[in-house]
Length: 93
Image (cartoon, rainbow, N blue to C red):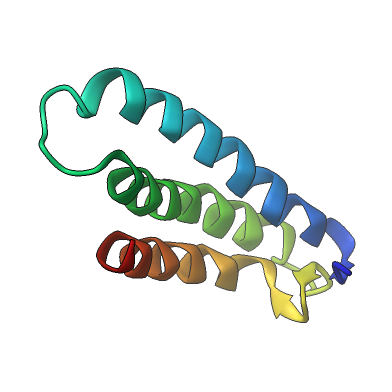
């Protein structure tokens, strides 16, 4: 069950769309030039690339009140969580 408040539902949507876009780019461009497994690069870039728009959008929507969250974590904090998850995924996968 996903728990969100306000526009917090946009956090996973932005991440999923970014992950799809990054996977397509990694599959078509980077894998042919770099000898690192595709999953590692895709997880790292997905987390880092998704973190920026989530953070910026979170700052905008939570400017006056912090009523937008996902799993009781404010929208913009997810902008730091996803890059950390991407870095961990790069080394673990």
